[in-house]
Image (cartoon, helix red, strand yellow):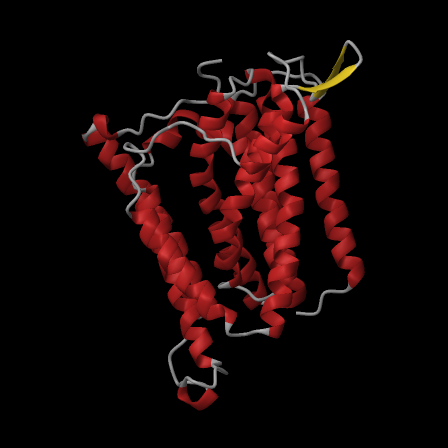
Length: 336
């Protein structure tokens, strides 16, 4: 897939325009985002992603379009699991409901920039060392195994600050409470950061940690950096609104971790098969490719959509029959 430089710049500019419109319309007057408003924005972002995928199909063919949609759906579904941590962060720092959208917008914008760096580095490594797919595949299978063993009901729902947050607290004093929507204030001539800034850094850096499994996963579906970046961008842009839309539904997806673990394991196997098919390691089959079957993008897309559909239906059936199975996670706006 040949992507001219001007298309990269045009795409990034278009994404920035969408974010600017979102920021201007939603955050011009801070307010608590309603379910109806969130639903309209989610529909809008999903529609834009679909139109983008159709554009890829028209100009580059169905294979690349399929890779984009598979990557987009995978990144979006992996991001849903991240929302549990976002809920815990919002609750821990008692973020006022009217400022939660701004926190997510800026935090995810930071994550998008950092993911862009990850993607560039990953593409460069893959171009030089094709054997890295063995590592990616093994890592995804291991991550899927760990995720399958995760029990959200037994997890300690307490956010532990990472190195970046501890560094910020060491460099800057933090105010006792929020100062409207400001991140920095001056008190008696001394600069302070507010809890708003701390939460934004927490959201951004936490999402970066999640990129450690999502980036290798999407590289298992497409090797095109342009598709990897745009699939991540559209998934992250729609994530903020999804946070408010899902609300109480989020804690009913009791089998989400199992479904995502199956997807990660599947992509891990796909990566290893492709690595074997193009093998160049001298100690394996004399450095020659092995004749193993590979998994096409059509099968990958079908498996991803099918697993997510089964996971969602099974989760809703489970909590309907056994209400006590609902995960005890605070909804947006709780404990403020």
